Image (tube, rainbow, N blue to C red; front, side, top):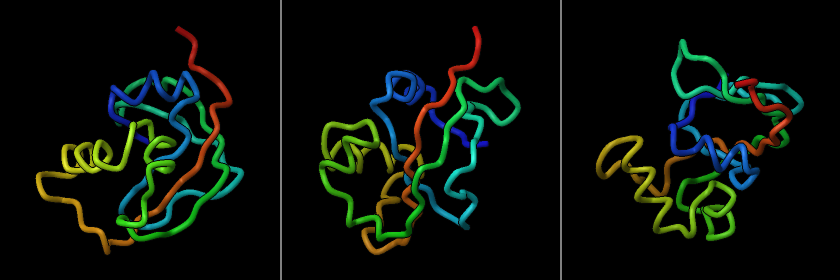
Length: 109
């Protein structure tokens, strides 16, 4: 299972958001299918096939990467990161997981 903010649902369903960066231990494996949810105990809104998993420093993100994350540019992505993880959470040298995924199924309404 992978949790997303509610404002990420539509970009995922529209196949515009195809990557996510996460802190912590590696919990994703290429080829695995994850339920995508907005709440831990909520209903899934989609199933996602993990296409790539790599570790990188947060500050290595480019505008192309930010676009794959569903944002217009790195600046917008940094603002979102700080909103999600807390004010001033952006640490360019922090190692994070870059997970590439593909929408394989939308949850039935």
